[in-house]
Length: 139
Image (cartoon, rainbow, N blue to C red; front, side, top):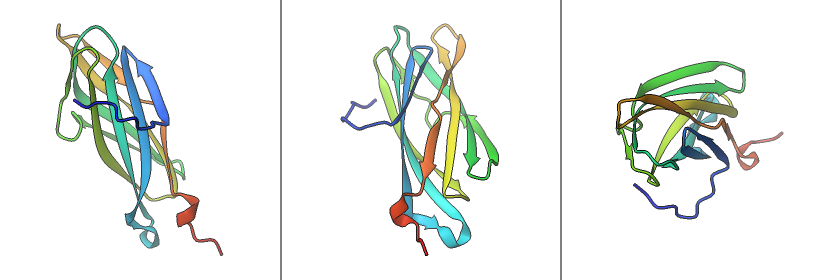
């Protein structure tokens, strides 16, 4: 579990006593615009703001590019982990999303299970990706 390091998260949502904060960044070095391959990184911080512990068991993502095409991704845990949250605890992780366009967005939810075996989900905010103007050639 991590401590808040004063980082700014522009995309925030709260549901079922969990707060999800997201920040995004364009990865210039891992992108290849000539092949329409833009890599975006994102950092997600999940905090249990409630009074009951729970474990993250899976996730589902909707990934939309600037042309309106949507891909769905789901699977167990996040980055190979299924973090357990006591009240007040947070977990932060980083991942990435390749897109064929200069812009896009992502949203979804995490499936959780509390200590009694009850399942529930926590919704993420919609978070957006874009290539900064500094990186776009204009002619």
